[in-house]
Length: 526
Image (tube, one colour):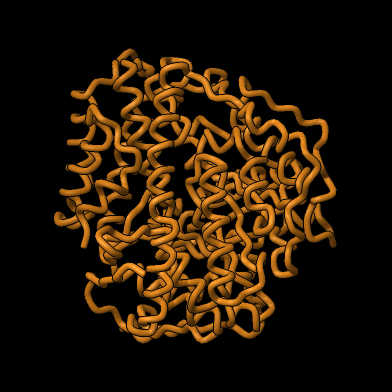
């Protein structure tokens, strides 16, 4: 096994997580799988170059037999059969208690987009998950407020989301390289919690983000198989739900489920990252791939509707669950009119998902759990899911998935300013250690900033003309950025605002498009 060195500083109770045995397990994972991960990241670049050249993606001819074959994923364990409402959020201690008390069926414990990977967050997140699994998590704040688990609410099933394949963990060195963030997050959680989870009639369940191909799913399956064998756990105990949040993955949904079929639980329509991926993948493919203002792009846009209907059809054809997208709205008691209008939109969105055949959906705030449940209860009744609704009538073509040009709406100055404002606000929060930020009554994560900066980049590079006749140029963006900078100067500490403004300008205007803004952002944190 390669030597594992802990380069990060001391974290409270970190010695309970970074034990010699756990580090050895991480070393074994890296020795076997880190090299293959590197190869797959390189394959992403090659495929993107081909798509940029042709302006196309298509279903893979070499995997036609998988799509036409007769196979099913493994039957879901009892703890994952009813997923009608899932709450997402970071793993800080307060949010952990609130999520477990929310009444949701599932808690997506997020070590990825809702988490700034400060070393303290990485390790303390594992501490909090350790206590959450055992039902011992509680918190008393410096102000004396106490948070503890309620006895009168059924606790949600924990489904942990590790970092995507693209992110490293520089505070752990394994051999002569940085650790792979995904393997660190998965490995520590699985090693410390698998037996406790099984003793609670649950199990080691995961959400897998940012994948772009079935080969990346195959690698996860190999990781799961090895981990189970290494700890003497029955094969197939691990279950994974894959976020279909990249445009190439939308063309490989069946193949992704097939690769994970003994460990698969379902697919999720990660709508915000999916929009970012569409922009990123076809950012230089011309006007047909330029999106209007973010707020104009609803789930009824033809290319988004094609994506979600294909996801439900694919999942139910293969016995897997289809989980809907995020409702990011945060109820605001101080503004009941805004809250009422937003709640009506969320209700319509959840009713649409339930009507389309989804088995459940996401919310970001405990105050939205009941609303989501109510809409799914109307369709599900006493049934735990809609696996019996196979949507055989759905037929989705490559052209439909790529029909971005049919999206209604336009690019406006308000949309440009909003993208810059939200992007800077989020980056300031992220750099400060908070990866899930409340901005303008919405709970935003990294996908928000990704959409914002990628859309600005795309508008500039395509010379988009806004409503009113003004062309989007680098100079215009910098002018808007200066205005936003001045507006936020009294609201955000300078030590966070200044680097956030610099970083937004870098990732929105640089000639070379950063694949993920979290990569250069990571270099700015400890």
